[in-house]
Image 1 (cartoon, rainbow, N blue to C red):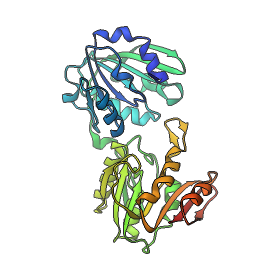
Image 2 (image 1 turned 30 degrees about the vertical axis):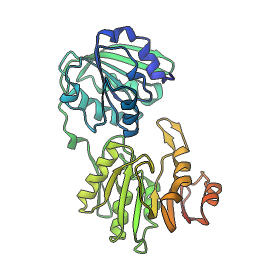
Image 3 (image 1 turned 180 degrees about the vertical axis):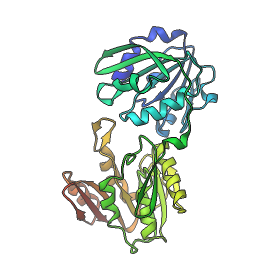
Image 4 (image 1 turned 90 degrees about the horizontal axis):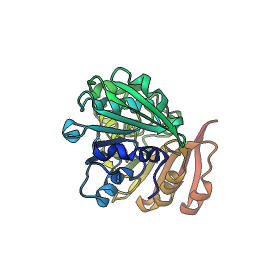
Length: 336
């Protein structure tokens, strides 16, 4: 079993958890929680594909795929193991939710990569957690302590609202575009017009910014929004509702849950996986897009100006071009 550096740090203290009833949550990157020996193990996963994988491996452990943690989920647990994500605001959002579901004196372990901002956990959560120990190893940090004060969690308090050309964009921590509307997304949106018609697929919909912008300029399109993040899907729904627009929102890891074809696929695809650069998502999106495009269908996506995908687009499409470009971003357009 290959486990992450963060899980390796937890593993070094595995004897502590043999008498514990453990609730796992956060940025879990491996299946280590399934193998740690405890009295009780419960796990909440953010990505449905991870949830399905965990459920297949072990039917005796309670595994959840919920946007928010509830007291019903954490019932009978006395210990928290939380994997710190790459974004501190996301960690605060998730942990305040988790702490609100546990009683005072619950033991908590927070583990994360050095470069993720986990070092700031003691100061961020000083109001709620009494930190007792910090250990460092393998470029990871493990923080342990006890809940000293219950938090009050209100979901609406964590939504950030952006206004762009009279459109309301709703965002939660950890969702791309949370702090501000991405300039690359704005460039892609600037290429939208009333000429766009038919069925459109928004891959990696995030806050829903691309979709509501397209519906604003082309109100007759039929939109399908997909993402593999529960937070993103929630934001997209809130953004659509706030603008009194409609679209079909589906959980999907790229095309994993898509079973029809589209006239147009739009996307601002990520090129990071956590803290590491990763181009697999963009390349998979391009390679497999033709299976989900109608005859003469179009793929339109934005990427950094320094990245080149002409070789892939030439392989899978009849023609392609750079539709628009700035010093930082460019929009590719490709036709079957």
